[in-house]
Length: 476
Image (cartoon, rainbow, N blue to C red):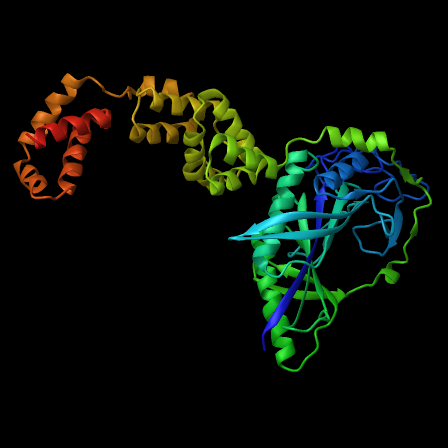
């Protein structure tokens, strides 16, 4: 039987505020366990929360950037459940009156464009972290993350494949980075997704029973989890079984998911308005002020790169998918003025280096200015493209200015025709067979002679002059 896959995502983004959502504790990642907490975020009796206004601002920014309607009045609610990493036995979230509703983002998968609806964006506090000790069999609790502010972005069930789901999360990540509300470092848990998935026979209108797999923090994990869950649900149905509504966990090392608990419904959480916090009321002026400060978003930059700079659509799409990469591109172009060359270096080398080193583009070991200087050295004829690759690798290792590298290593390109002609005369005279091959129509002979000349000149010969002089020799 052919099945249709129905996917909706709940994406949790950790907001880049300096303090937590209801207290003054630091949100900095990586502190010693249980050092960034206080009576409020550890849920001590009698401790009262105070809403961090920056959290509301960032949530509204995210809502405006994704085309949401912004609620002029909303509230916060208690979502009751007990886990060891939530000492209060409840989470403060939003239930029936979220800050943002009815938005959307557009994604591209191959040649296809698609709009994915956003049901809502609401604010809530994060839970602590459980550290399972495989040696003792015990579990430790770190409450540094408890109370860190989150926005939860809930999509409509509009996605039909792992590719669409990954494209959607990538698009959200880009938008959140551009508007500066989250660093979106998935490896640190700043951006993670819950996958709601069901399948139904093609042609059936009613949705199948869905499962929810929690806390996926990489694009690879999201894709692998979806493919696994599709196969699992198909196997259950085709063997005559029934898919259970349940919450699941993904084991990325094993490449498989497993059930954690039966899925709760809203009434299981016993939502009620948070009695310790006032309703949130936003004025038209407040919302307009935030709207006026929104930066240029990825789609707008992409269109500008294509129409004004002349980049190919593919290059523009890749570069604008990351704010850090796009900022790097713009900074380099501002120095050297050669957008196409900057784009070529990004597409062939910068992306590779960032991936190999496992760093964000704003953490590269060299600056955009130094890449621009390297391109200017090529454009001026100071170094050849081949030498530039060697200089680039040195920049990656040391972060040094390319001009200093070229000077220190004596890599300046030789463009003196007289000096190049001496080498050409010598190489051509030593390779009569290559001359005969070229005259017989074997074009590779030209490449061989150029290579021999470059070897003789240690790669520093001007390739344009070199080619011209060799061709003059061969065509005599």
